[in-house]
Image 1 (cartoon, helix red, strand yellow):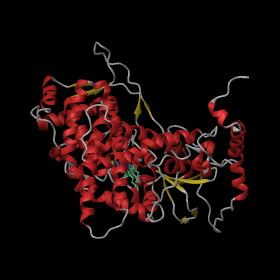
Image 2 (image 1 turned 90 degrees about the horizontal axis):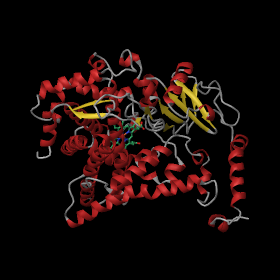
Image 3 (image 1 turned 120 degrees about the horizontal axis):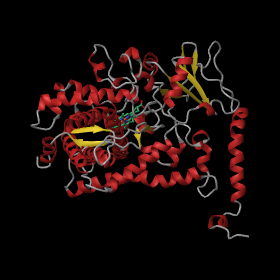
Image 4 (image 1 turned 60 degrees about the vertical axis):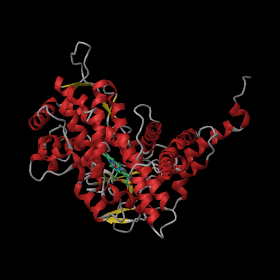
Length: 525
Ligand code: HEM
C-alpha cells in the first residue's frame, strides 16, 4: 500500500465525496427538470426560435467553445433577430439586429439592464465590488453615478496630459524593445489608469499594482464566459469546501480572490495614506474623497462606493485598451496600404517636425477613421458583456422570461453591410467617409443601453493618441528574420470574453532616422 497524501490523510472520505459530487453533477439537471416548477408561457406566446434543445442539457452541447461569433452568426441567419438557447436550466437569447438591440436595450432598458449573478465571479472570486458584475438597481446606479461624474465626454479631457505622456513613453519603449510590444502596451495603459484613478505613478518595470491587476484580469477572462464553471449553473456548489476532491474550481477561485481583493484595496489605501500626509496627486479618488468630506450628510457607505468604482475602473480600463491596440498592430501588418495612407496624412500635416498631439485629430480624418475601423473590424468583445432581464417580457409573439441572459451580438451588428457598406470582413477605413455610416462606438463596440461602457470617452482618446503616434513613427509588419526579410504572418484570435490576436509576432521599426530622433527627443520634452 502506498503512502497516503496529506490531503487524503485528513479527509479519509474524500474519494467517496468525489464520487458523490460527480453523481450530483450528473443528476442535478434531471432533478431540476422534474422538481423545478415548469415555466408557464402565457397563452398565444412562445419562446423565440433557436436550435432544437436536447433532453436535460438543452443546448449546452451546441454552444461553441471557440469563435462563438461564427456559430451565433449561423444561428442568426437561420432563426432571425432573436435566437433562444437553453443551457441546462439557463435561458439565453442572442439579439442579432440593430433594430432589435435598440428595441430591447434602449427602449426597454429598465428590463434589459440587469446582470446574471455569477456565483464563481461574484461569490467565489470576490469580483462583486466591480460595477460590471453588479445587479441592476440602486447599488449599481450609485457606482455608475460616481464614475460618470469624472468620465463623461468633456470630463475625460482631463486625462489627456497623462495619456499623451504615456503614449510618448510607449514610443520609446517600442523603439528600444519592439518584441515586447504586448508588455509595453499593458504597462502604459495601466500607468494611465493608475495615475488618473489613484494619482499613483507606477514603477517603470515590474510594478506590483500592474502585476496584481494583470493576474486578476486573466482570471476574469477565464471565468466571465457564461457557463465556464458549473457553479454558475448550480450555485449551491459554491458551498462545497475547497478541500473536497473535484472542487478544483473553488481552490482556483480562492487563489484568485486574494489578487482581486488587492486590486480594490491596495491602491485605494495608498492614496488615502498619501492624502493624510498631504502628498497625494489630484485624481478620481482624491477628488471624490475631498468632496465627500465637505458633505454634512451623506450615505455612510459612500467611501466604499468610491473605492469600488475606482477598483472597477482599474479592472475594466487597462487590458481593454491594450488588447484593442494589439488588434490595431495586426490590422496594420495585414493591410499595409491602409498604413501607408495614414502615414501620408500624418506626414502631410506634421512633416517630421513634431509628434502628433490631441489637437491634430480634426485634421487627421483618415487616422480617425482607422480608430473607428479597429472597433468595428474585430471588436474586442464580439458578444458584448451579457445583460439579463429583470422581469418577464413580451416581444411580438415571443415570451422572454425574467432572468434570461441577453447577449447583444456585437459582431453581427458591426459586420452588417447595410450599416457599414460592402466587405465588412475587410479593413477599409474609407467606409466612414460615406454619409450615414454608423459609428461603431454607438453600435455595440462599447456595449448597450444603460450598461454601455462608461469608459468609452477615455478609451477612444487613448486609442487615437496611441494609434496616431505609432503610425507617425513606426512601420508595422509581419515578423522579419535577422536579415530584415519579412516572414509569414501567423496569428489566431482568442475566443471567450475578450477576442484579440494571440501569439502574434510582428515587426515594429522606426520609419526613418528623423522618426527615431523625434521619439528620443520626446523624453526631454
Ligand atoms: C477599447 C477599450 C474598451 C472597450 C472595447 C470596452 C468595452 C466595454 C463593453 C462592451 C462593456 C459592456 C457594456 C454592456 O454591458 O453592454 C464595457 C463595460 C464597462 N467598461 Fe469598458 N471598454 C473599454 C475601455 C474601458 C475603460 C478605459 C474603462 C474605464 C476607464 C472602462 C470601464 C468599463 C466599466 C466600469 C464597465 C461596466 C459598466 C456597467 O456594467 O455598468 N472600459 N466596456
